[in-house]
Image: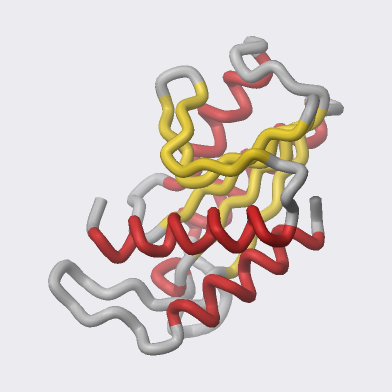
Length: 154
């Protein structure tokens, strides 16, 4: 992962910690063998934030988390999964890519199948730079707004 993605993860964690201090927030939290970008725990409540920059198969992240919960590898009374999608998944013609639609479908199925699982797709209003590219000037404001959106749903 690049330094920009790491900076975004850290800023999300910091903002979420300020907005929802009852949670213990960390980056690169492992659920079974899968690292999750940002995670927070509070009593029996777990919040997981997956940031999808340019992943070819974002549904895989959602499916793994759903499977771990089903297998009870992720013990919690409530698990909120927020999957953040950058502008990479937007179509020029409007709408979003089938990659994102597939991930959202898996999230909806997981939400219906398990009472403790709640999935939310979140627009992360950045176009990620290609390797070596400059960070968008407004990345901090976008990250802060996204943290507020997540916090409002917890």
